[in-house]
Length: 250
Image (cartoon, rainbow, N blue to C red):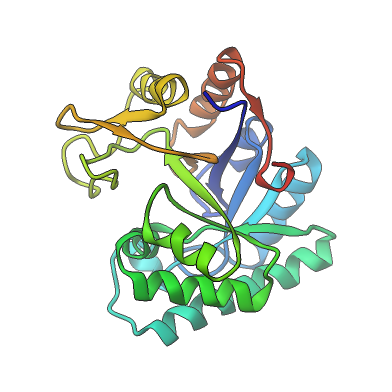
């Protein structure tokens, strides 16, 4: 069982109660103008991070707000690198004005999932992050191509598991819309988190135990019950004897 764990949430997307979630997490992944987010939302979320002592990171995605960045786009690696670099630079500039240091980068949605299995996309993201600031932590799906590419690029990486997303037998997230892809009930999410904390694994939709290593646990902030989930998950992690701490403090 791990002794400590980062607890992160995707925020600044304009569709959740960020202020109610922030007290219960240790890291925030802030939408930076691709799938969602604008200067106002980025600034507001950074200020919440500063007020609550939460680590702030970039959450770049495909520039496809109509589909919330959840539709894979066939872009060459150079364009992938450019969109990550541009979104990161936009958030970093506002963070500097707000006196907040960015600590990590976690791709969003379809970009995240494509990077889990496509080495070229993973390498493009890692190169963009390393070229912008090699001190940033690159967050990716546990055991996937993205953290491998980050490590190869000399970055510190964080393997991520999800509280309320279903898995297949290969340790990949089930596609949204597939049965079991989203764990709607708090009890189901708590059971998945406890299974990971106690046994280092999740149970796939077909019943297969899937061993996973993780440095950080994710909750999606766009679900309407995210504040209640955040509080309950925080309470459960502490009850399991874990210290919740941001990646930068690990």
